[in-house]
Amino acid sequence: MGRLLPGRHAAARFLAAFASIVAAAGAGQLAVAQASAAPARDGVISHASKPPTDWPSYLNGPAHTSYSPGQKAITTANAPSLVSKWHFDAGIQYYGSPTVANGSVYIGSNTGWFYQLNERTGAVEHKRYIGYQATTTCSPALGVVSTAAYGTDPATRRPSVYIAGPDGYLFALRASNLALEWKATVALPSSTVNNYFNYASPTVAGGRIYIGISSNCNTPDIHGGELAFSQATGRKLAVLYTLPKGELGGSVWSSAAVAPGGDVYVSTANGTNSNELAGLSESILKLSPRTLKVLGKFQIPASQAVDDSDFGASPVIIGRQYVGACNKNGIFYLLNQSSMKVRWEDQVGVPWSGYLECIAAAAYNGHDLFLGTPSFTIGGVQYEGAVQERNASTGDLVWATGLPNGVIGSPSLDGAGVLAVGTFDSTATPNETYLLNAHTGAILNTLVEGYDFAQSTFANGWLFTANDNGVYAWAPK
Image (cartoon, rainbow, N blue to C red; front, side, top):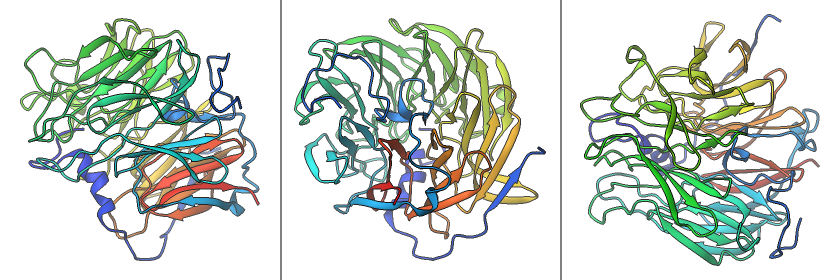
């Protein structure tokens, strides 16, 4: 994450809010502004991709579109009357998002336990402890923040689940029972200081797994970068460091995106203490899928840098032409994949201001982008957070909806035009999980109160959400 204030760190800003639940009631004023106008549980599966009704990984796949066009059971008509089908609590906080595949929900908790829940009942099918990082030089202590990826093992053809643990390992687990297939070292944290931490979620594509190397809170800094592992064996295949040997900084705490042609896109955090823009820091990088060699680079201009100009948002692939991500300076950058030059950029939220930051990945439905952003002004009124629809080709604002809390978790979209997004900040107004009409921005429902950093996921006709009060499944009556 990025340097924010002396002795402070990015993780603390959006995770320490879980220390106490805000009890005050009242959702505050909201505003909408429009522009002028399964296979067997442990069987061998023959196909390499997931069933179209599942949500198999962070941001719903390597392209990070956060869009499930086949999911149409939850509509703008029935979204206001969704009912809770089950709630799994166990007194646990959740920062990672629900991964839904093959009849199960996979999710890690802040206690360090990784759970496999029955998709239809919420019952615990299996669980496995994958680590916990206590407080030494950073706070708070953290369990699992990463979101799992589900895929088919290229060697055994068995369904597997891949998850990054707090103790510096990447795990491959059998999807049927969470038995260990292999584990590989990303970066092992010290026992005396909080140096390394796995914030990133694994991206599985082309028989490889990509994951970032990140510091916990820059106290101390680490040598940041991106790794590629063999999906079948866990063998390390390639590494890219964002700064020269001996220089510390340039963490990658977002997750890599993979374009249809195979190129890998990675967003990076800030550089050294003396140079925020050192090396490959504060950049969106285009990398070779086999070697992680840099094929192209966009770095924010020095004139647009702020005190903490991380790219905390993961890139989204927009067809075969574009890639984009929001920086903590509040600017969303859309780049040409071929040249890595800016097609358009716009100030979609305020620059980093202590706890408000633009770190949510955008959802993309094939035409427009849907952004969850920090504070945004609509009709002369400034809101703590907002959801926006923008034309992907031009950046033109279609609509914006103000919310009483900041949005730092990524929105998700189904094929019937329902957008799900949660809020997460430390203001007095309670945070909630919202459903919006993706065509108009109108709020359709508020599902549950709680600090919601996890992405909601549409799968098999239901919606799955997670916050500091547990994991939930929702469906039409």
